[in-house]
Length: 238
Image 1 (cartoon, rainbow, N blue to C red):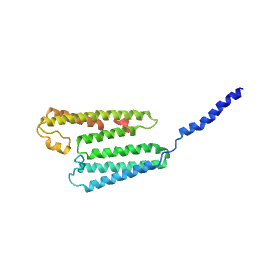
Image 2: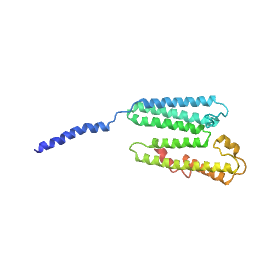
Image 3: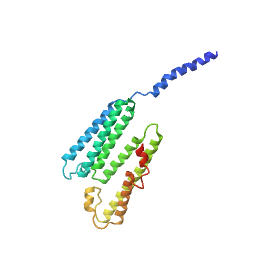
Image 4: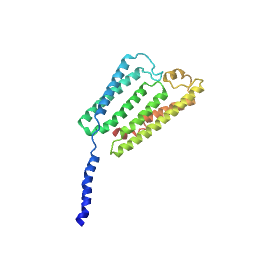
């Protein structure tokens, strides 16, 4: 009788073994994502080079919100060529290690969206548009820091997101103070950077000083400059 009672448990153990194996060994993700990443990075780099060598002067694009000046064209080529090298490395790693394909799939879409936002930041001719694109890069970079099964990477991601968001909130408040400064001086507030250079005249008032201080402090926090750099080593390590 005892042997009969043990038979169901043995059967359940036998049935549960393949189920557990099936759950732990997930099939590799499709191999399309690395190719998409490499192709998109190649197109981005090619477009950056074309813009750098064909656009002349101080042209304004997208109703004036984008302006590929000389500095913007230089950094556009630099970041897109670097990203092309990263894409080629990820494509090669995914070929040699099929187990990474699931991670590469998520990395592909997040990194491509990140690079689009980063290009907008470089080309931006409007403070709010540039701020929005920079905040978008923060939202997209936070999940890129997280590594599955590594709790320290999750903590680093949260610290990066917290410090970056607080810094960019200070920047937005600084923009509001600068707009108030323009109103006090009798100008119509504008956030186009090429127009601001012509409107800033005369001695700075209190609102301009506060606005510039908040902008420098906020961007310094986002960049990890002292003394707001405590998030930087851990995040870059992950």
